[in-house]
Image (cartoon, rainbow over all chains, first blue to last red; front, side, top):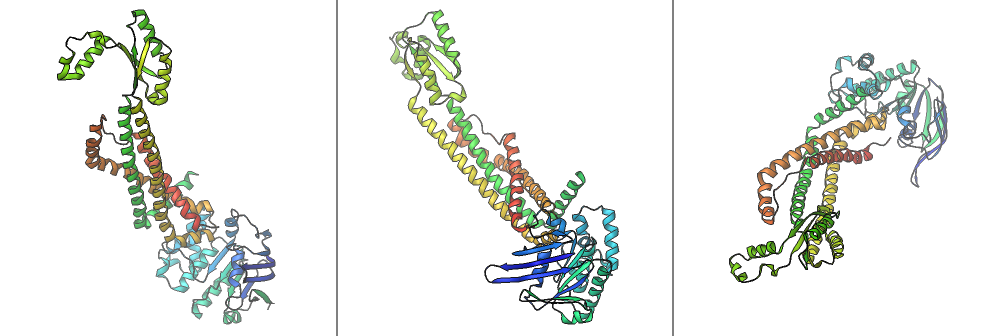
Length: 221
Length: 298
């Protein structure tokens, strides 16, 4: 599903964020990208959703080489991905329902189709009773559940999550992890970047350890 | 396709209602800028109208040595009238010349008592078409008239013509430079106001891009919004200009221009009003496009 060959990313002369990273992640896998702050976890995810381009090397997602992908094709690649951020990135001026419906709206889906799907998904994250609220009226955990619902609404091939539990308390973290596991059980490949060792210990899965931009460990339980 | 367009227009309108302050600021800056441009256009148009009136004075008078026979006179007038530069030709007899001169002397007309009526030469007065009321047109006509040996002298106000042409050129250049400058300043102000709107919604733009929105999908509502705001600003500018023109400008221009010989003071003709509206729409779209370039990067 995801293949990286000799991937390097540097910012200017001295700012090397990733160096010679190689990995293969099969379809349906659940992988933690872990390591200390500044190890290159977020950079790796950014390369996967083409917010950044690698300085060297090749990246393939679902057999498609995205390294030199033209700007016009990027939106169509992103439609196969679900992305979750630590700061949720919800649109504050829109309701919860509208936030989750947004990816469907972007893809020009019919209104009745959108309503049904969004309601189902909000129900699955336990927020169906808050669909008319705005993000700021919700707690951090609830906002993250909305962000996950938005990421899953298009049944993505890959779910990329950058420190999704970074700001949340341990109880909420459990709920969030259940959602990721559920998506993974339905066939979505999950890449979760985190530096939370406790989280990994409680839900052991394959771990790719990055340090100073280098991949130092690939541990499969 | 119409469904998609309706959806994009709906989104643009929704964005405008969600940000009423910035939306009003954009429409306001378009209105003020285009209003200034309209005022400038009104002044230039009226000056042009005045110069067009003055240009009627550009005539060629050709004096005849001897009074021609009727047949000769008819052919003379016909050949002059056949020139493409010529609007009309009048024959001024010696008697008419004498009467005209006498009339101009007014109270001193008695000075002419005892003089023969034929001491002034007969002449033809050639009025040129509007496009040829310039030095080149006049010289062309004089050159052709000179081929007829019957004419002894020509008068066409050479010095006045030179000054008139210099002034027209100055007006044209100043008009073009100032219009360009005003249009550029308008675009700059509007683009910066729209940039504020786009900046306020950069979070939404980023999310749109991350969930797979194409560049066109993201930009279209902003461009439609820009067009609507620009068009709205254009309409308001025309209305406001008309209001201010009627209340203040018309009387001021009347005092200035009617004394200089202009016939009437005019407001922007329909074509110019349409141009202001189109300029508003164009400025709105272009201003949005400039701002979006910075924030929408896929």
